[in-house]
Image (cartoon, rainbow over all chains, first blue to last red; front, side, top):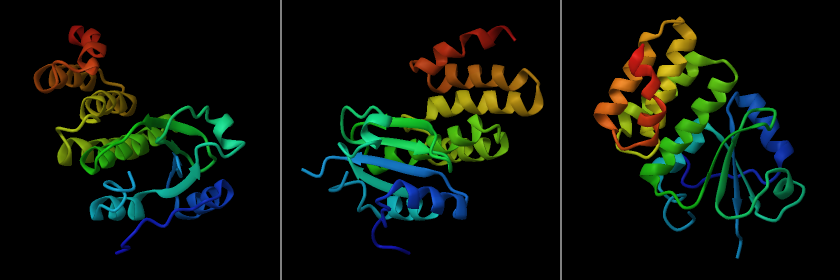
Length: 33
Length: 150
């Protein structure tokens, strides 16, 4: 099992992966500080 | 989220198994405008075409984060008329996280999803009865009130 979350950083790549894995996308807007 | 929720092993396992994680700064355009972002963290669940089906704003600890995401995933399926998949995710909330903040809405949506599947009114009344019994103070108990007459 992964030991950390492997975040996508681009919408295009996330949607492509979403279609490939047939899973929805979690989009987290965060404050990098 | 970075200090408590995202390092949690159950959260990592859940995300890895169930959803594609995408993280962007709150002011990244055009996404910030497209999604009307005003506060962080804002978490949005999207379908494969990028359409929003669920959002939550503010910190969530792991025991609330996972059921909240399950509810978001269920809403994706519900709004795409994939009711069996919606029901499956809602039942995970009710089985594994019955005390979470997502649970009352899960009861409500479970009843509606079953109604959509069977076209019988009984699941709606069952949702009302469960909400009244288990979550009487929730807003979802109030929203289900008309179903008492079914």
